[in-house]
Image 1 (cartoon, rainbow, N blue to C red):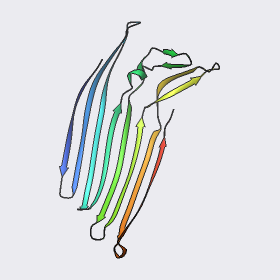
Image 2 (tube, rainbow, N blue to C red):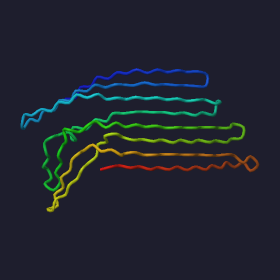
Image 3 (cartoon, one colour):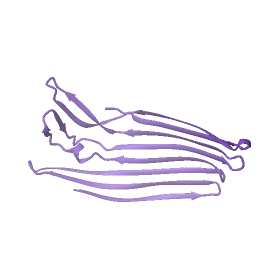
Image 4 (cartoon, rainbow, N blue to C red):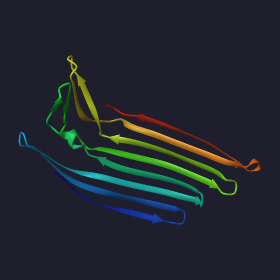
Length: 191
């Protein structure tokens, strides 16, 4: 049984060229699990946070710079927490981990856009960085008989970077539009 109460607040400020917003939602969750075979119970109460912030500056109608932040609590699943070992497959034994902590994902992004109507020129760029504290991953052990025992655990070090740029323009004399773009991605996951 899972029962969640959720609420939040936000503040927004809008000026002529500036827009700022900040807020946070909070979810309070009660988790009750009964294992009918042994009649044991697992109870967890936890708080989920969902903060967000955005800031944008509008230089002109077609030129803007913005920054965004989002946070998100990620609770372990019921299977991650289940303290009873599953023996459906004798070569792959999953053991739950009732001591798992919630993970927290952070996402930062920067964006810039500029478009010139008269020359039909555009420039769009973006960069984002994500990292997760207490990420939920897997620990695997294989014994000499080939039996695999695995379990969900908390790890640190999961992160990713993403970037993008797009530049385009029009050659009016020959009525041809050219565009160039590129992106990069880097990711690190720990297990």
